Length: 559
Image (cartoon, rainbow, N blue to C red):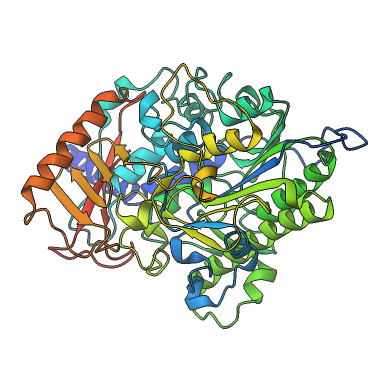
């Protein structure tokens, strides 16, 4: 009996230890992740390739500067009279692009999450056409987000462990580099490749997130120079840097993964990783100014894609201190990040003026998708419902501006739906470059529409898919389908742009018509390059960190 009692006690201790380990699995995984962070060299200067010493004689093609914010909500800029904390954070530089050019009132993201949107921008094609359906994420991320529900959750996420066997070779290894094999196929043609062939010098800044193996990196996909990070997120400063003001969301599994797993680093043209200089958004903006100077005498394409204002929420102390009127700490950090983003957009615009390039540059600004629910801030996508990862307007209806003095009419608003897929053909059109003819290009050149030369709608329909969650915008009718929930939503955006009145039960014939059109689009798309490993709920009308209640609207997001 003594032996059995001793064994029972040992078993109890082991069970207790396993239970504690399970309850603290996020912290344990964080410690393991921190130990695996790659070696980061100290900061060293970047030497940009210099263009000609003198400008060319005669006319020259326009430069193209494309600025892509990360997770910027529709209401995070003051252009439409809103802004962070009810306008406490003015965004005059971002706003100026819309005021001095064309604001596309119905600009749509390529997807509701970052990487497929970026793939659509780079290729002018729905990312689902070539299987880049889901945002590349490490297996550890998928497992944590797919198993850790918010406190008190009534709808819990799922992690599909059985699908790991179908992942591409090497992508499930327990290393930070494994996720880099989840990539846009090298056979896809990027806008950088098109413009480079036309004689443009092409430069990428910031977040790539389209693959990191040979053939998929930015320097392999048409960029002459690339300064940034391959993964989907980065630290803005080291967590304990005295100049960093941080905000963590204790309920959010994504946040729990990011803080220990993200290095503070960049690479230049595939170099070893090294530390940026100061706050990431400022560093990228300062280097973009230097690159504009280096290329002032030749046509250039700049893809400026900072991670601002994606989590982790980290503000520069100077920006945080400038917003004492915002009392909520998280909102103040977020507002300070928006302030830094706007400052660096301003640096780029000023550099174009200083170099005498302002009138001969097409500047495009948008966000990769809507603001994220997991930061816990309720107003970032107003007036729209929904968040990043949903196909409600809050997830895909983004700020979308184009400015080209003397070509695009200043201070105008374009009403018809346009999309991220159009940026490819628009940039090519400005440069006088031909788009590929050996594949379906889903986007169109928006310049004739914005100039008032073409009165038609650029698109009869726009399409989105993420696993079992699909959407079609056909004219003003919008159908969302969640096959995992056996649910549909139908909205007439002409009468109901904020999606308050679901007409799916009142209009069964319209639902059937749009379902058939959606199926026809689906049939053209490729099989995903890798399976969805998680499926999680996104509640439509409130952010994370607030209690879930029965009967509330939600979607199931596949990734």
